[in-house]
Image 1 (spheres, rainbow, N blue to C red):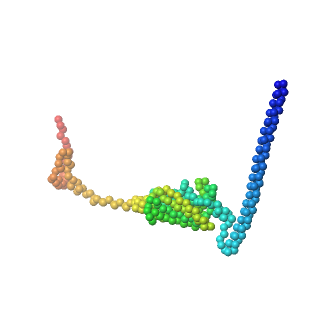
Image 2: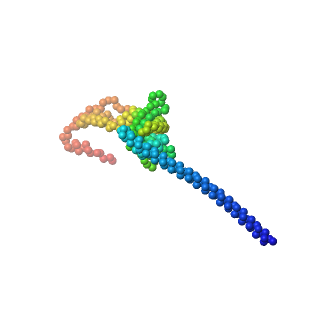
Image 3: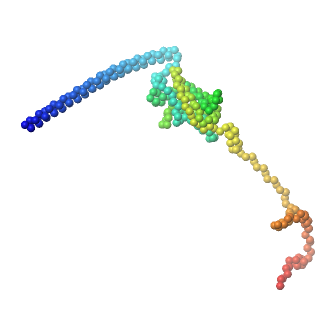
Length: 285
């Protein structure tokens, strides 16, 4: 009797497992049919996009041919692709700032890296007419404007820089008016071949250069000093100067006010014995 009950329970358990497995298989088959329908829909959309792309290319080629017949400038396919990828421009903060090129205190020009970017933020090599405007926010009125620089598309194309640190168009802007503030406002504008315009503004940090009077002082110090005057030559000494020297003065005594006695000429010696007696010393007993 217990054995029969055990067999019945095993049969019920197997039936339940079979139903569960059957339900899982049905669910998986349903998901697979949904994915197949979505894939078929995507394939249809992709085929339509390819067809529209081929039609657009043929139309673009026809338009280029018409422009070429009229003598108008045309864009190459790769130029057109880069042209319509650009969404904005940016001034690279890490590679934009003051630059010292003459060795004197302060910066002498501004280094700028301008980067056209697509919708994903990737740099795009798209030349165009570039214009920079530099101003000093600390000034008022018309005195805020410090300089304006313009670069046509032909020159911009040669300014492209591609490296590990940064990629974009690099420009060096020498001062048109010497700034006095360490914080300046830079505005950049890029105009593409189809007339679209992109703008960017950034605050740059510089080291203001020294003023002109200070630089003149530096140059004056660096010049060679004037030649020293030749020392005055004294007349030859014939011994008469010794007669004009005063006698030595002992400590605590005042110098005599009388003039020194004139020097007498030496007497002529006729007797050699007198000369010997003058050099004899008495013997002390």
